[in-house]
Amino acid sequence: MKTIKPKEWTPNQLARLPQEGYWLNIWGMGTSNVDYHAYCIKNGAIQYIRSDYANFIKWGTLLWTCMTTRKQMATLPKSRIGDFFHFQTIEDMQAAFPDLPVEFYQKPVNDF
Image 1: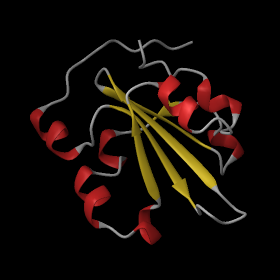
Image 2 (image 1 turned 90 degrees about the vertical axis):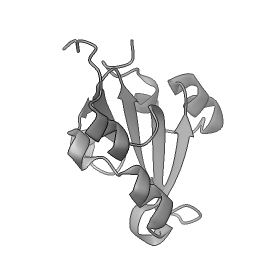
Image 3 (image 1 turned 120 degrees about the vertical axis):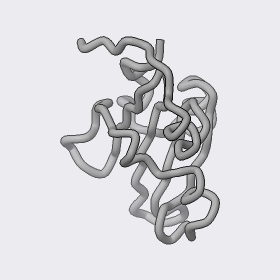
């Protein structure tokens, strides 16, 4: 398994990125077709996992410029970006959403 060395976010990254920790993005809440995207923003890296494509049902690296920004989360309508929920730990996310796919509970490599 690939290991990630801890690093610091730059001031530009900190100004753009949402709070560190886990973010669960839910598309289609209240419908029969719900998709989940989870992001782990820790140790100077972002890992993500998605339920909507078989190729993404494991944690992978996301460029920081591709992460939904804190401004977008605060201003864009849910119809465009879905619902975002923040958690300090993966265990907190699991407790709040116990029915997520099992792969969402395997810690990503940047959570150490």
